[in-house]
Length: 258
Image (cartoon, rainbow, N blue to C red):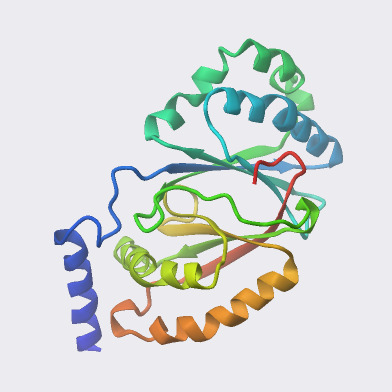
């Protein structure tokens, strides 16, 4: 036990003091926002779909943001329907200024008025969650999955790895940057992003998204992943760095860029 603690401490000190590249630092890393719309019924879902498709995504495109993903859960809760919107930003100030920018877009204001001007007792959603992430140094910008299947067949997986403390989370991120991303690349997991959560409700945690042609393709990839991951799973310097692993299975809407 003492040896494990020493190795864990050393790994953290190394990540603090050696080169930024090894530790996953990169000045050109993207920032990601994941917006989650909570909807109580199909009427709200249709209104938000219309807003995203006709007003919000086009306005983001005009503002220079591309490769925006819009997803819904494969097993949807009818009482709390969810729409996930993944927005990549090249710089943090792009995220900070995007709302101000699109609010000056006349076309956005016109096409989105049903949503934007909704009265208090006829709101288009119940709540909106927002998660802000910073890309890992091992994958500093998002990728468009190389998939040829129809969108309604595609299978996206969004995972969140929570850690018992900030130090353990930093350790898990280092494990990803140095070892795990290479496994995902080797097995062609079609990762969309890997990111550290800077602001969210499940901190400290990291999140990432992988994409597959369909459910069978997803299961085949994870079956191949297990023996590869077992080669690094038991390394003493990476023990106990995940306390909770949550995954959500998603499909892209017909108007999603991804």
